[in-house]
Length: 380
Image 1 (cartoon, rainbow, N blue to C red):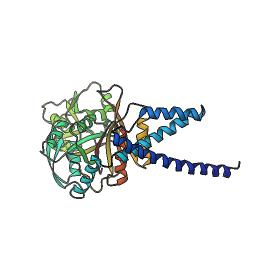
Image 2: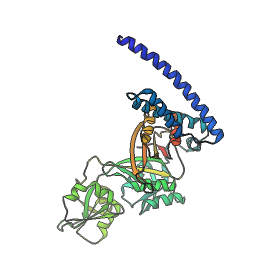
Image 3: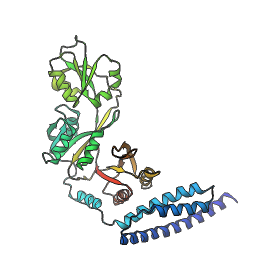
Image 4: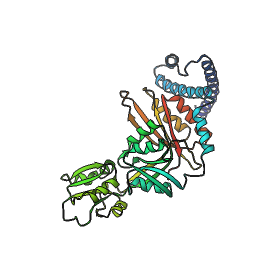
């Protein structure tokens, strides 16, 4: 046959496939109604296995793998549709709708009481002042202190680092997000400009110890590796390290911190080229106890536990691709309580003000063993 004739035949087959697929999805909706009336779960592994065995046998050895792949995807679409039929009312959809309608103003307020980890001069303070033009800041030594302050109502917002372009994610913050069930309501990307700082007039004394936050130490690993004779000591944050270097009474201590810390604590900049990368950025998130979604919010973060089976992650990623959603981040972390199973973190470019995106979130919620909506926000 000529190519045009072959394509004409394929077009006819495709038309018939779509007609049959629509009929199948209609039947899936009827199945969902029947299962809801009898309180049966949406997924039936035995039924899926029976269909796969029957259809792959009909296809023959040459096409059996393709039929298995095709119907595994059809099953996933069918379960998503059944979930949408079953769950016409969703607590998540209602929460998002309330946040969209009830969040005051067009952006985060200019004046706010905000909790930050660290002390004056910390990078968190710089991120806070970019998100809030006129903040009043409460400082805490530990990340959990920020969460506790927001939980107790001491302040409405908290600022925390969540990811660095060189050192990766701050996993402790993600763990605390799950523990406290808070939401991300804003984010700020901040360029990190590490400097080596020490006391004025101490240049004649060799540096025997360098102090800083563990993330900053990792971000300057090449410089530290070139000086193995120097002791490296982690501290709560870079600003605390600078304060210690200024006030500990020792001339042989230096700190890795920002230029702002040098000015704040009266330290000399010994070396301003110690970062592993000059393109070093940290993402800071603004957390809140209540879900707030502002009009410019265009990024969604999720935390998911998926079934421990082949194709579970691919089904989620494929569903995002089909919906035309750009996936900005995908990260996995082992789940300590479950051997060789992982929790996944997703960032995607999407707005919860879009009804199609909300429907997608509900489908994912039904597909996952555990689904946590971390927030919809704008990142500057």
